[in-house]
Image (cartoon, rainbow, N blue to C red; front, side, top):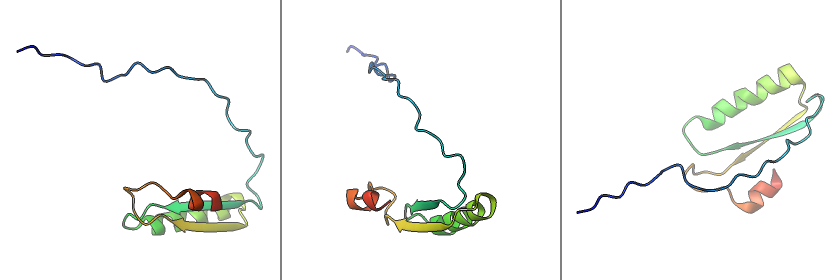
Length: 81
């Protein structure tokens, strides 16, 4: 019996990309948070939103729920974000 060893690192190529331009401030900005349906994820994200509002002056927070951590978010939901 022959045993073949496989390299888990793969052989794909990478493409360098530039970073998106950063905002100077979050003051007055809208943020959107997506919960993944895990237990207490909504509680954690609401606390995170409160910290963003307090420390960075975000004016509005929108919450979205994808209901199941194992499934990808629907494209329509991502568009709403």
